[in-house]
Image 1: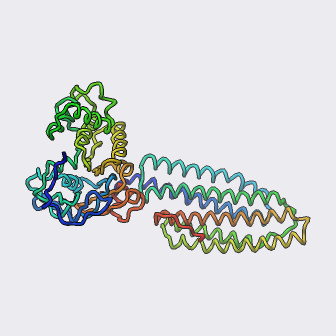
Image 2: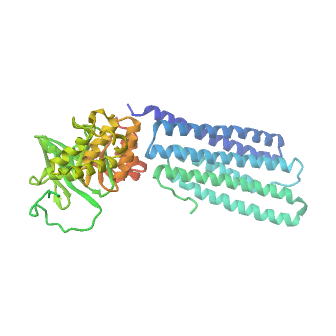
Image 3: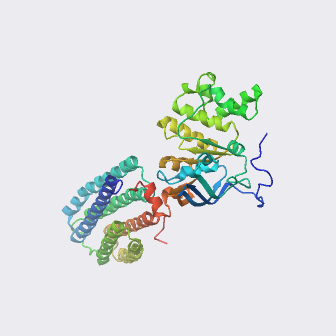
Length: 219
Length: 269
C-alpha cells in the first residue's frame, strides 16, 4: 500500500481542478476573440457573467490547497505542488480577467464601429491557446522540456503584439476620429499578450515544482 | 577543574585549526554482534548549531547518538570502528576518561528520568559527585542551570520539593538543567519531547533554540516538523546508512536523494 494514499487522492483532485480552470479560461478567450470579430455584444456579456465561475474555481483551489497544507503539513515536492497550485490558480484567474476585458472592449466598440479587427489578433489567440495546451500537458506530466517551450511561444505573441500596436498607431494617424475604437482593439491585443504572459508564469511554476528553484523563462 | 578526557599521548597528532566543527565523524561503523547498525558514517557536526538525526525506527540514529558519549559501552555486544574526533581526540579510543567525556558531552533521554530527590538535589547531586561542595557555588550553578533550562521561574519557590512533583515537561527541562550544570560543550538529545504535550514540546523547542548559542546540540527526533523548525543541519539515516546530510532547509524543501524525499513526505511503506 502506498503511504498517505488519501493525500495523493486529494493532490490529484487539486490538479484536476487546475486543469478544469485552465479549460474555462481557454474557452473564455476563444469566445471573447470570437465576440470581438463578430461584434457579438450578447456573447460578450455572457463571457463577463461566466467569469464569476472562474473566480469561484480559483477560490475552491485555494481553499483545497490551504486545507491540505494545514492538514498534511507537506514538505519538499508535495509542498511545492501545493504552492504551485496556489500560484497557477492565481495566474489562471488573471487570464480569465484578460478574456473578460476583451469582452468589455467588444461592448465598448459596439456593433457598428466600422473597423476591421486586425487579423493578427486571431493569430495571437491561436498561439495563446496552444500555449495553454502545452502548459496543461507540462503541468500534468511535470515535463520541464515542454514548460520551457512556452517562452518561445510567448516571444511570438509579444512580437505579434508589437506589430498590431505599430499598425494601429499608423491607423490613428489616418483615421483620427476612430481613435477610441482603435484603442479598444489595441487593448484587446494587449489582453491576449498578458494572457500569454500568465501562461509563461505557469511554465516557470512547473520548473519550480520539478527543480525546486525559481527560473525566469523570460531571460 | 576540567578533567582531561585524554592524556596528551592519547591525543592524536593532527594540527589544530580554527574550525566551526565540534565533532568530526569519519567512517563510523557500529555493530551489535554481527548486526551492523551504523555503516561508515562520515560527516562533521557544527559548533553552536542544532543537528537533527532523522530516520525510521531501527535506522541507527539513536545508536549513532549514543556513541557520541560512549553510551554504547554499556551494551556488551556493541563495538565501534572509525573515528569521532572531539577536540583532537578520538572519543572512541578505549583509554579515554569516559566519565570526563560525558561531562563535556551530556545526554538527555526520551523519557524524563529525574533522580528520586528534590529539584535542587537533582542538580546538586552531580555537582557534588564532581567535587563541587561549596553551598554558595552549588546554589549558583543550580540557579543558573534552571534559568538556562527555562525552569527557574516555575520552581524557584519549591526547590526542595520532589522532582516527581513536576509535570512531564518540567521534569524533562530539569533533566536538561542537570546536564547543563556540568557545563558541557555538546548536548545530545534523544527524542527529548516525544513524550510531552504540545505546550511542553514547544517550550523544549524554544529552549533548544536558545541553548545553541552556548552549546552544540545533536537531537534525534521522529517529529519531522520539529527537525525542520529547530535544526540547522539534518542527517537522514536509513538501514544504518547516512543517506543524506545537508542544511535542514535543503533537506525539507529540495532534498537530493529520492529516499530522503520519500521519508520526509511520509511515503515509506
